[in-house]
Image (cartoon, rainbow, N blue to C red; front, side, top):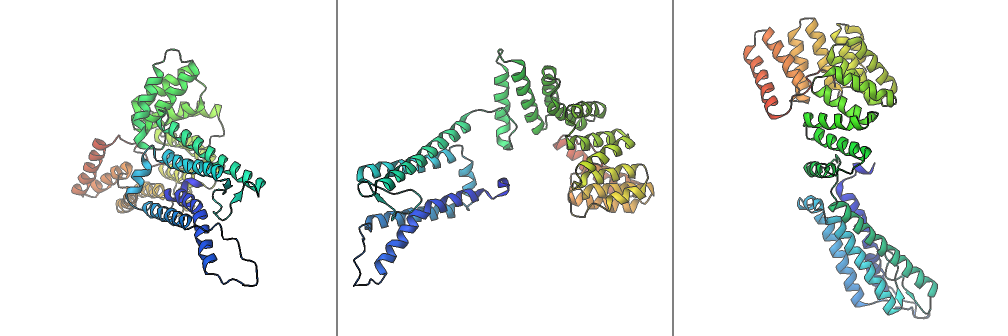
Length: 403
């Protein structure tokens, strides 16, 4: 849930919390100086009002406002990406909290942080509130120092994992390789590290290296269903559908509740040409995740290859236009049009698919054939050229109509 929030949200919330105290003081300071006092009532205690404290509070609010504005500038993401940013920010606030703790001890008057300076307590007159405030401030300072240290340690500690941060993948490979050089690693740890390095290679689209690492990991831990699943994906991407299906089978025996494995095994069977088996897997996947449009769209593809337009269109009709799976529907309808030898409709469906994904190899390949069939040789060769360019700049995909 929180991953969907903008990057600035957490910082803004923190700045708002940090500004509550200074803002409260400024408001109360101004209100106390401008309010009309009843002369018959006892004079209020205004000993807490201080020109120095007012100046400090205004400066703090100015800094908070400046940081808040800066967080929406183009330079902010670069600063936040710096490994020491979060530990430094927490360290600064921890130091501030520690300073207030020392100040409270020396002046015998404590102010609970994040509450407003007007809520300060004298050690002699309000001992319980004073020590409660000191304890609260000490806890805040300690937690922020601990968080700062933990973040710093996390940032500087090399990790062997396939994080979502692309810039860390190459460093992760180095870390994984260094860890694997330890000859005293027990088989379980070595298997885990090999599997992790395989996932990083897969992220980097180094399929051969990923396959080698997954296979080495499975020699040490042959019942690791997750590594079997990941190796199956690599085999499928490399076009070795028989081995992919074998790994999906083995993974599902160990972890039969893996919904995605049924869909992926169905795709491998679809690419291998085993259409009835693909339909069976897509049906299972649909029954297990009825809100996922991909099983239906891909089952429709399988029916389309079987030249069964009635059942194919029944599945396609249950996928809404605009959903991510819509491109699969367009490929399926192109296949149905191809069976009818309606090359113009083939081209129309695939052209729409290519507006959604200009690098869709299947659509380019089939549209090139359709253009050639109607005598549009120049357009056919243009699609072939786009395919060749894609193969030069990125690893070839499965070229499958399914997804």
